[in-house]
Structure formats: structure tokens, C-alpha cells
Amino acid sequence: MIPLRDANPTRRTPIVTLALIAACFIAFAYELGVLASSGETGLDRFFTQYGLVPADLTRSVSAGQWLSGPVLALLTHQFLHGGWLHLLGNMLFLWIFGNNIEDRLGRVVFLCFYLLGGVVAGLTQVAIARNSTDPLIGASGAIAATLGAYLVLYPRARILSLVFLGFFYQLIEVPAILVLGFWFVLQLIDGVASLGGTNAQGGVAFFAHIGGFVAGALVAIALRTRGPGPLSPARVG
Image 1 (tube, rainbow, N blue to C red):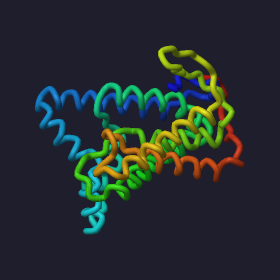
Image 2: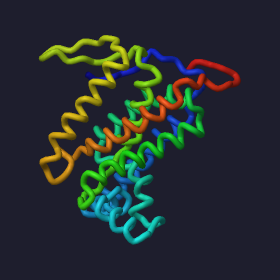
Image 3: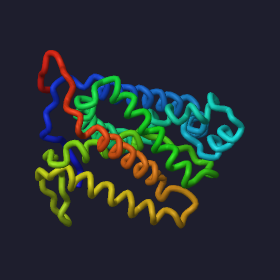
């Protein structure tokens, strides 16, 4: 089941969501430059420096080095991606679900929510594999926090999804609670299955997804009784 768009209008242009998407594309363009100039070895060094390496973070925190590179990587890793499919998949989810959460929380609060969601997601993965030397990269954890908030705030929103039925596929509108609930259950299953290995199964940090999603849902539950803030002028976009 692949979501394509939602039928949940916003009242203003999602400037922060668009800026986050642009930042990820700019960072990916820089990665391509590193790859072109320094090859795979140079790109690996770049990911190790700016990606989140659990073992490095563990050592830095133990030493009280709170402003070191491994700690700052809790933020920088959120803008790096390992390939076109990784990038485009994440940006599709961020665009579909991020604009409504930005609309609900407000731009500044949403930016803080998104980045902190990514931090919590990264810390969750570090807690599971604290001695891993493989860098964690991607916006998936922060986006998972956005998905968790969307599920709580807009469970009945209709999501146009591409549903595969064997060799056939169909476009249907599915409630967000089914789309995002199904996604979260898959993360739980794959996350539990990955516990027997030495690292995230298939290179996917499932517990970052789980941690981010739960954090976002909890924040949304706390804010659920809060109505939309005043806006000017209101417009759909």
C-alpha cells in the first residue's frame, strides 16, 4: 500500500515542509558531488562524519562531549539519504502528511516538532544498537513522528493509495488509520525480527521509525484538545 496524496486541505502554504524537502534535495546534491569527486570511499567518510553513528554517540555522551560531531549528527543525519529511492520515498511521505501537521501546529512549532522527532527516533535506534559503527542516515525517523501525529489528529482523513493485489493494483481512498496503522505494524514486525541480527535488518533502522512514530503520536495526543490557531488570511493549498 503506497500513499499518493490525501484529501485533507490545509489553510496556508506549508513553507516549513517545502523548506525541509528542499534542504534534503540540496544535501543529496552535495552527496552526489562528494561521490563524483571522491568516489564511494569519500561518500562513506561523509556519511560517517555527518550520519548518526551509535558507537560514536555513545562514547561522546559518556565523555560529556555534548557539542561534539557525533551529538550534532542527531540533527545532520536527518537530511542525508542513501539513494534516489530512499530520498523520493521519504519526501513523498513528508509532503503528503507534513503539510497538515505544519498547518495544525504552526510553522515554528512544527519545525521544532519535526527535528526533535528525528532526534528521538535516532536515540531509539542507538538504544537498540549502541555499539554499531554503521551510520544512520535519512529523514525517516522525523517523518515517522509526523505520521504518528497525523494518525492521532486525522485518523479518518482519506488517503489515495496504490494498493497491490497480487499482479494487479488499484487506486483507492483509504482512511489514514488503516494506511498509517498498517505501516506502523510492519515496522513493529520487522523491528522485532531484526533483533536477532547485529544491525538494522536490510539496512533499515526500524526502531528509529518506531520511536519517532510513538513520540509523534504522544505529542499529538497531548495537543488533541487544542483547536487550530488563528491564521490570516486563510487559504487552501
